[in-house]
Amino acid sequence: MNPFEEKAKPIEKALQNWQELYPKPYDKREVDPYTKTRIILMNGTEFEANWFSHQFARHVSDNDLRRDLALTREVEKQQQLKISLLKPQDETPLEHTIGYEQLAVDLTAELAKREADCNVKKALDFALLEDFDHLYRYSNLLEMEQGVYAEWLVGRYTEIMPGRPTIAHHRHPVDNVRFSINSKKADTQTVLSTMIITAAEQQTMNYYMNITNFACTDRGRRLYEEIALVEEEHVTQYESLMDPNGTWLEMLLWHEYCECYLYWSCYQTETDSRIKKLWAQNLEFEISHLHKAEELLKKYEKKEWQEVIKDAEFPKPLCLHENIEYVRQILGSTVQYTSEKEEYKKIKDLSPDADFFRYQAIINPTTQIVPSHLVICDYIRKNGADYRFQVAPSPVPELRDRRKDNTCVGRKPNATESTDFFCNKN
Ligand SMILES: [Fe+2]
Ligand SMILES: [Fe+2]
Ligand SMILES: [Fe+2]
Image (cartoon, rainbow, N blue to C red; front, side, top):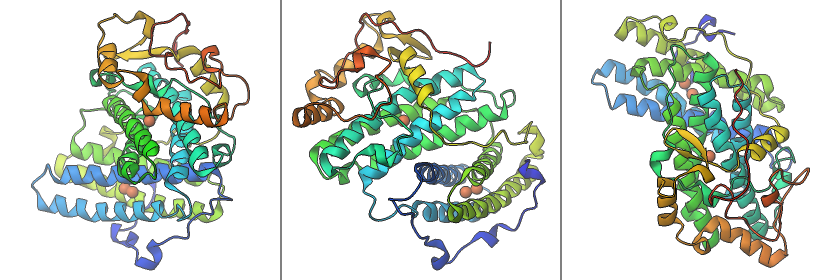
């Protein structure tokens, strides 16, 4: 499928009235977990499309161009609102959070599995273990505060157990910047993956930023505060991978192309027939946006789309599904890693004056004030053991004890051996 070869309708045809804009939400008792994660992913993709367009409009002076951007941007906003309202009223913010972290785990794993660029794959595998740990911390909070077992929300497709402990995620900001890709040389899949994961993590960061002060308890507010800051790190990491050299109009073309790819993927993989129709409708809207972006690129920069996207045939559809074996493999091999500038290093190989330890001393002067640790301590105190859903013991022996929350893995130089990151090429 090449979306440039599809017929496009005028952009205005996508505008909807209030009746059309307000969808019937899914039933939280019956919805497939991956339908929920697709909804969160597309909510985040539309936010990125809308917000990119706002930034673009603030950096050009031609009002004809700004008017064209305003029209498409309005459609992107309508799309985002309608998709976000598929979440029902009776799904609590904390239950919805479980969907965010399941998306982070299974989207990251799926993108990592298909990634040919080793630098990009390492970044995905690296943050994968962190979102995997967030899922565990929020799940314990959810059971403690609302009596809900998160394993039923994730459909038992994603394990719930410690990853690289959240206390170890707090790196000095300089250690989160990676090398960027070159979209003229990279595979189409690689360019798409850097954009998709950045939008998804940015959505997660914004969601936590917005709900932190609405959490019902002190414990919840503190946990969201801590994890929101980790998501800031993830956004820093992933946006640094994206090609920084495209012009605004070239990047507009890539954004619309990426939206087309994702709606096409959602359409191909959706199991709910009603929501599948919504993906089909949105794909049609995006094809119009893409053709508009193509026209603007021609008009203002005298460029053809082929000069920007060398291979416009879509890669295989992005499919969200379980990745239990893959996550276990990455957990077992790389849990003891942190990053230093653009590189990944085992904690035991860092010099004692590394920025990582300096920053850890600032933010975690003692484990006794770290919310992600305290939430598990509270749970263990009340229940005797933490809450987990596992298909087998953890591949990391130090993370098997359900009566003690480990705060050393990935943070303190100790004896455990990790192997190394695995690349798909070479
Ligand atoms: Fe859109
Ligand atoms: Fe994340
Ligand atoms: Fe769009």
